[in-house]
Length: 133
Image 1 (cartoon, rainbow, N blue to C red):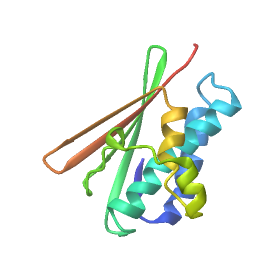
Image 2: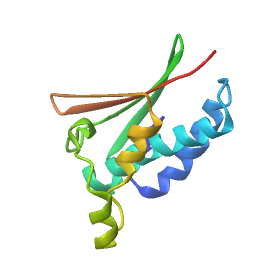
Image 3: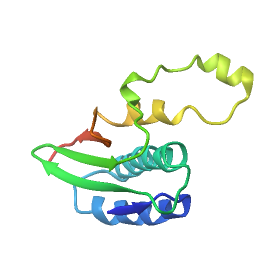
């Protein structure tokens, strides 16, 4: 799926994921959690890396390998490797009453593996979820 870098495109992403995930033997909870994780990564790219530029886009591919689903998100924006992200002190976040900054924590809890690579201006984030067939 090619996704325009506008937050309004996230609703189309949710529909695409709902349709794509129903073909796999995943619980409804797993489907919702995966959707949340993929949407969070895409929203972060749209907002932070691409500054909601409608001329930019990101690409989502879903691949099935034995026992796992791979959600490959590719873009050409400013690289952000979530594997290098340091989890903030939750008490500090709570004390500051700030919004945001916790989505990556959710992504790391929901997905079983995360891979990131960046080369020649192209960034790829792979979110991997293992499942029982």
